[in-house]
Length: 120
Length: 115
Image (cartoon, rainbow over all chains, first blue to last red; front, side, top):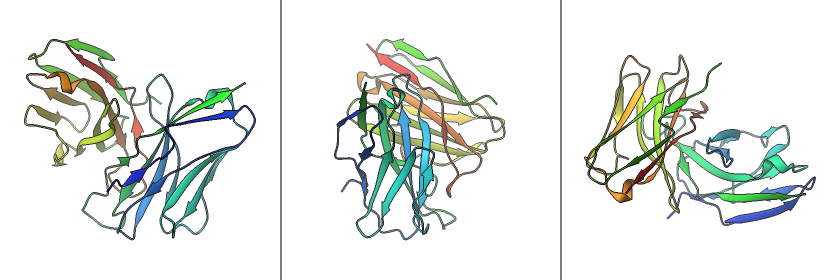
Protein backbone atom coordinates (compact mmCIF):
# COMPACT_ATOMS: atom_id res chain seq x y z
CA UNK A 1 0.00 0.00 0.00
CA UNK A 2 1.17 3.51 -0.72
CA UNK A 3 2.26 5.43 2.33
CA UNK A 4 1.24 8.82 0.91
CA UNK A 5 -1.68 9.25 -1.46
CA UNK A 6 -2.50 12.44 -3.29
CA UNK A 7 -5.64 11.76 -5.29
CA UNK A 8 -5.73 15.01 -7.25
CA UNK A 9 -3.29 14.98 -10.18
CA UNK A 10 -4.32 18.53 -11.04
CA UNK A 11 -6.31 21.35 -9.47
CA UNK A 12 -7.47 24.71 -10.73
CA UNK A 13 -8.35 27.73 -8.60
CA UNK A 14 -9.20 31.34 -9.28
CA UNK A 15 -6.85 33.97 -7.98
CA UNK A 16 -7.74 35.15 -4.46
CA UNK A 17 -9.81 32.06 -3.71
CA UNK A 18 -8.89 29.31 -1.25
CA UNK A 19 -7.95 25.80 -2.36
CA UNK A 20 -7.52 22.49 -0.53
CA UNK A 21 -5.00 19.90 -1.69
CA UNK A 22 -5.70 16.41 -0.38
CA UNK A 23 -3.26 14.06 1.26
CA UNK A 24 -3.90 10.77 3.03
CA UNK A 25 -1.23 8.64 4.64
CA UNK A 26 -0.71 5.16 5.95
CA UNK A 27 1.47 4.31 8.91
CA UNK A 28 1.35 2.17 12.02
CA UNK A 29 4.00 4.26 13.72
CA UNK A 30 2.62 6.40 16.57
CA UNK A 31 5.11 9.21 15.98
CA UNK A 32 5.41 10.74 12.56
CA UNK A 33 5.56 14.07 10.80
CA UNK A 34 3.74 15.28 7.75
CA UNK A 35 5.31 17.82 5.43
CA UNK A 36 4.20 19.81 2.41
CA UNK A 37 6.59 20.98 -0.27
CA UNK A 38 6.07 23.23 -3.28
CA UNK A 39 7.95 22.62 -6.51
CA UNK A 40 7.67 25.43 -9.06
CA UNK A 41 8.71 24.97 -12.66
CA UNK A 42 12.26 25.91 -11.69
CA UNK A 43 12.48 22.51 -9.99
CA UNK A 44 13.53 23.45 -6.47
CA UNK A 45 11.60 21.88 -3.61
CA UNK A 46 10.41 24.54 -1.17
CA UNK A 47 9.33 23.55 2.32
CA UNK A 48 5.94 24.99 3.27
CA UNK A 49 4.61 23.52 6.49
CA UNK A 50 4.75 20.50 8.77
CA UNK A 51 2.59 18.78 11.37
CA UNK A 52 3.75 16.37 14.04
CA UNK A 53 1.47 13.48 14.93
CA UNK A 54 1.32 14.59 18.56
CA UNK A 55 0.61 18.23 17.81
CA UNK A 56 -2.71 19.25 19.30
CA UNK A 57 -3.36 22.13 16.96
CA UNK A 58 -3.34 22.30 13.20
CA UNK A 59 -0.21 23.92 11.81
CA UNK A 60 -0.42 27.30 10.13
CA UNK A 61 2.21 29.28 8.26
CA UNK A 62 1.05 32.49 6.65
CA UNK A 63 -1.43 31.62 3.92
CA UNK A 64 -0.80 27.91 4.40
CA UNK A 65 -2.62 25.78 6.92
CA UNK A 66 -2.72 22.06 7.43
CA UNK A 67 -6.07 20.40 8.08
CA UNK A 68 -4.86 17.45 10.13
CA UNK A 69 -7.43 14.73 10.84
CA UNK A 70 -5.55 12.01 12.63
CA UNK A 71 -8.39 9.49 12.84
CA UNK A 72 -8.93 9.74 9.10
CA UNK A 73 -5.19 9.81 8.43
CA UNK A 74 -5.46 12.91 6.32
CA UNK A 75 -3.32 16.02 6.21
CA UNK A 76 -4.77 18.35 3.65
CA UNK A 77 -3.05 21.60 2.70
CA UNK A 78 -5.21 24.70 2.56
CA UNK A 79 -3.94 27.71 0.67
CA UNK A 80 -5.93 30.85 1.32
CA UNK A 81 -6.15 33.84 -1.04
CA UNK A 82 -4.40 32.08 -3.92
CA UNK A 83 -1.83 34.03 -5.92
CA UNK A 84 -0.57 33.46 -9.45
CA UNK A 85 2.80 32.55 -7.96
CA UNK A 86 1.22 29.62 -6.15
CA UNK A 87 1.00 27.74 -9.45
CA UNK A 88 3.30 24.75 -8.93
CA UNK A 89 3.46 21.05 -8.03
CA UNK A 90 2.67 20.35 -4.40
CA UNK A 91 3.98 17.28 -2.62
CA UNK A 92 2.86 15.78 0.65
CA UNK A 93 5.51 13.79 2.49
CA UNK A 94 5.85 11.79 5.70
CA UNK A 95 8.66 10.93 8.05
CA UNK A 96 8.05 8.05 10.46
CA UNK A 97 9.62 7.01 13.74
CA UNK A 98 10.27 10.50 15.01
CA UNK A 99 10.73 9.45 18.60
CA UNK A 100 13.06 6.60 17.82
CA UNK A 101 16.80 6.79 17.61
CA UNK A 102 16.97 4.56 14.57
CA UNK A 103 14.55 3.26 12.05
CA UNK A 104 13.77 5.42 9.08
CA UNK A 105 13.15 8.67 10.89
CA UNK A 106 15.37 10.60 8.56
CA UNK A 107 13.93 9.95 5.13
CA UNK A 108 10.88 11.51 3.59
CA UNK A 109 8.35 9.42 1.70
CA UNK A 110 6.58 11.53 -0.91
CA UNK A 111 3.24 11.35 -2.64
CA UNK A 112 3.02 11.73 -6.41
CA UNK A 113 2.02 15.36 -6.18
CA UNK A 114 -0.78 17.69 -7.26
CA UNK A 115 -0.28 20.27 -9.99
CA UNK A 116 -2.01 23.48 -8.92
CA UNK A 117 -2.85 26.12 -11.50
CA UNK A 118 -4.03 29.53 -10.33
CA UNK A 119 -6.06 31.36 -12.95
CA UNK A 120 -6.21 35.17 -13.10
CA UNK B 1 22.91 32.46 3.54
CA UNK B 2 23.67 30.16 0.65
CA UNK B 3 21.30 27.28 0.05
CA UNK B 4 22.02 23.78 -1.19
CA UNK B 5 23.78 23.86 -4.53
CA UNK B 6 24.07 21.11 -7.10
CA UNK B 7 26.13 20.71 -10.22
CA UNK B 8 25.78 20.30 -13.07
CA UNK B 9 22.23 21.57 -13.47
CA UNK B 10 21.83 19.49 -16.60
CA UNK B 11 23.77 16.48 -17.83
CA UNK B 12 23.30 14.60 -21.06
CA UNK B 13 25.30 11.41 -21.39
CA UNK B 14 25.47 8.39 -23.61
CA UNK B 15 24.30 5.04 -22.39
CA UNK B 16 27.15 3.14 -20.77
CA UNK B 17 29.12 6.18 -19.63
CA UNK B 18 29.76 7.06 -15.98
CA UNK B 19 28.48 10.30 -14.46
CA UNK B 20 29.18 12.20 -11.26
CA UNK B 21 26.66 14.50 -9.64
CA UNK B 22 27.75 16.93 -6.98
CA UNK B 23 25.93 18.37 -3.97
CA UNK B 24 27.15 21.17 -1.73
CA UNK B 25 24.94 21.33 1.38
CA UNK B 26 24.19 24.29 3.58
CA UNK B 27 27.17 25.06 5.77
CA UNK B 28 26.88 23.36 9.14
CA UNK B 29 24.25 20.84 8.08
CA UNK B 30 25.37 17.42 9.22
CA UNK B 31 22.74 15.39 7.40
CA UNK B 32 22.63 15.07 3.63
CA UNK B 33 20.12 13.20 1.47
CA UNK B 34 19.86 12.16 -2.16
CA UNK B 35 16.48 11.66 -3.86
CA UNK B 36 15.54 10.83 -7.42
CA UNK B 37 12.52 12.26 -9.22
CA UNK B 38 11.41 10.35 -12.30
CA UNK B 39 8.51 11.18 -14.54
CA UNK B 40 5.45 9.49 -13.10
CA UNK B 41 7.38 8.03 -10.15
CA UNK B 42 7.45 10.91 -7.73
CA UNK B 43 10.43 11.29 -5.45
CA UNK B 44 12.35 8.26 -4.27
CA UNK B 45 14.82 8.25 -1.42
CA UNK B 46 18.26 7.01 -2.46
CA UNK B 47 20.73 7.46 0.38
CA UNK B 48 21.44 9.57 3.42
CA UNK B 49 24.62 10.68 5.14
CA UNK B 50 25.18 11.60 8.74
CA UNK B 51 28.54 13.27 8.66
CA UNK B 52 30.65 11.20 6.27
CA UNK B 53 28.96 7.90 6.92
CA UNK B 54 25.95 6.51 5.09
CA UNK B 55 23.87 4.46 7.54
CA UNK B 56 21.24 3.66 4.94
CA UNK B 57 22.01 2.86 1.32
CA UNK B 58 18.91 0.77 0.81
CA UNK B 59 17.34 3.20 -1.63
CA UNK B 60 20.11 2.93 -4.21
CA UNK B 61 18.50 1.22 -7.25
CA UNK B 62 21.47 -0.98 -8.14
CA UNK B 63 25.17 -1.51 -7.49
CA UNK B 64 25.89 0.89 -10.35
CA UNK B 65 24.97 3.68 -7.95
CA UNK B 66 27.34 4.85 -5.23
CA UNK B 67 27.79 7.98 -3.18
CA UNK B 68 30.37 9.45 -0.91
CA UNK B 69 30.73 12.45 1.29
CA UNK B 70 34.00 13.97 2.36
CA UNK B 71 34.80 16.38 5.15
CA UNK B 72 31.21 16.30 6.29
CA UNK B 73 30.35 18.60 3.43
CA UNK B 74 30.29 17.96 -0.33
CA UNK B 75 28.74 14.75 -1.58
CA UNK B 76 29.12 13.04 -4.93
CA UNK B 77 26.61 10.60 -6.41
CA UNK B 78 28.19 8.39 -9.06
CA UNK B 79 26.29 6.34 -11.58
CA UNK B 80 28.37 3.82 -13.52
CA UNK B 81 27.44 2.41 -16.91
CA UNK B 82 24.38 4.63 -17.16
CA UNK B 83 21.15 3.21 -18.55
CA UNK B 84 18.21 5.04 -20.07
CA UNK B 85 16.09 4.29 -17.01
CA UNK B 86 18.54 6.37 -14.97
CA UNK B 87 17.20 9.51 -16.68
CA UNK B 88 15.66 11.61 -13.91
CA UNK B 89 16.16 14.67 -11.77
CA UNK B 90 18.49 13.96 -8.89
CA UNK B 91 17.77 16.11 -5.86
CA UNK B 92 19.99 16.68 -2.88
CA UNK B 93 18.81 17.96 0.49
CA UNK B 94 20.46 18.79 3.78
CA UNK B 95 19.31 19.36 7.33
CA UNK B 96 20.85 20.40 10.61
CA UNK B 97 20.48 16.85 11.85
CA UNK B 98 18.85 13.66 10.75
CA UNK B 99 15.46 12.68 12.01
CA UNK B 100 12.80 14.40 14.04
CA UNK B 101 11.08 17.38 12.53
CA UNK B 102 14.30 18.90 11.22
CA UNK B 103 13.45 20.50 7.94
CA UNK B 104 15.17 19.26 4.80
CA UNK B 105 16.33 22.00 2.45
CA UNK B 106 16.52 20.95 -1.17
CA UNK B 107 18.84 21.99 -3.95
CA UNK B 108 17.70 22.79 -7.49
CA UNK B 109 18.52 19.32 -8.75
CA UNK B 110 20.54 17.85 -11.60
CA UNK B 111 18.54 16.76 -14.64
CA UNK B 112 20.22 13.66 -16.07
CA UNK B 113 19.35 12.50 -19.55
CA UNK B 114 20.80 9.23 -20.82
CA UNK B 115 20.62 8.85 -24.59
